[in-house]
Length: 219
Image 1 (cartoon, helix red, strand yellow):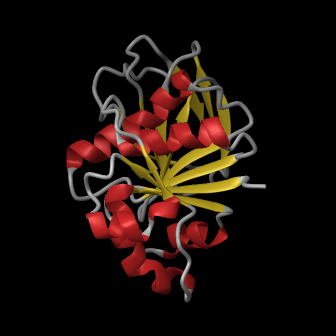
Image 2 (cartoon, one colour):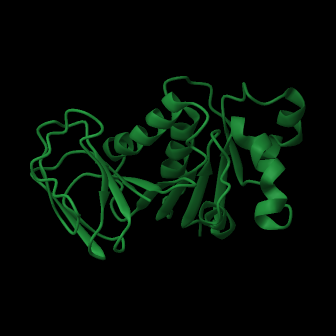
C-alpha cells in the first residue's frame, strides 16, 4: 500500500533533516523530470544507499535522451502544458494511488521566486481540483510546512512557532485563538496582512467566516 507519497520538484533540493526524513519514510517517491539529476546526486546522502524514485513524471524536455533511455522504466511522459510538473505529479497520485493518505511535496521552493509563489498557491488549487477529504497534503521546505485550508481548523502546532496566513479571498474573515496577534479584523487584500504571527498556545484555532481558501505556513 502506498499511503505515504513524496513528490520531489525542481527547486532547491532539501538540505535539512526533516524533509530528508520524509523522503526516507516514503512508500512511493515521484520525481519531476527536471529534478531527477538533483535527486540522483543527493540520493546516497539521504538514504545511505541507492534508492531510485518509483516514478519520473513530466514532458521530459529537461532530461537528456541518454537519461530518458537509462530510466525509461520509471518515466511517465505527460506532454500537455496546461499544468506544471508538480501538478502533473499530484494529478497522477490522485488518479492512480487512491490509498495515498499522506502527500508531501519537497523541493518546490527556492531558485525562482515566481515558481515558489506559484507552487505554494497550487496547494489551494488542488482543493478545488480534487476531493482531499481524509488526506494530508503538505509542502515541506527547509524552513517550514505549508498547507491549504478551506474551513475552520485547529492545529496542534506548539507554543512559539511562527504562523503566517494568506488568502485570495478579501471577503473572508478568520477569527483566531492561540496566536499572539488576533486575525479577526484582517482584510486579506494583500499578502503580508496576516504574516509573521506566533503561537502562544500549543493549539491554534482558525475560525473561517465561510468556506473559502487559505494558505497556512508554519515554521
